[in-house]
Image 1 (tube, rainbow, N blue to C red):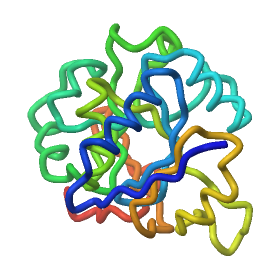
Image 2: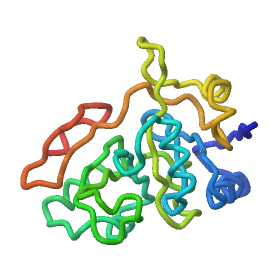
Image 3: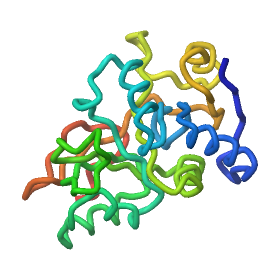
Amino acid sequence: MSEFIKIYPENPNPKEIKRVVDVLRKGGLIIYPTDTVYGLGCDITNTKALEKIARIKGVKLAKANWSFICADLSNLSDYVRQIDTSTFKILKRALPGPYTFILPGNNNLPKEFKKKKTVGIRIPDNSIARTLVEALGNPIVSTSIRDEDELLEYTTDPELIYEKWRNLVDIVIDGGYGDNMASTVIDLSEDEPIVVREGKGSLDIF
């Protein structure tokens, strides 16, 4: 059975953050808050954890379109090819914030994602998510948790999330109520930005 850990976004407790990071390093799965909906995540470098998430989501790992949660823009060069100045300016204006940017991947991608030409990058405006990534030392691979209830596409109440997911993950973080609107997805891998999905993030960044 998983742990249910309360972490306050205003000032994430280093002890609790360390507990979560230790679980991530051992290949554990976590559900954690972002600036949009709650996410299901694991350490990007742990193949077994990635395979577990793929099984839960019912997808083949090689075909999975998951986001890489980064702490700040300095993480980008780890997995993204060099980007031009105009693209960087868009990222700088929008992040941290409720956006997923699709960017051209480089040769350092973990082997599970080597065949992918692009990656989805998120830097959420949520101190819990970013503090976890900083403490872990590399991105968290993340996917939104969906709710079967058609009226409520995303679960927002951490206690209800725990009830539903406690047998599938190792930790559910209670970081307060989540949003029920997903991130805005923008493809910056081509010459012109393409809006793939309009979500919480405003399009006024252009």
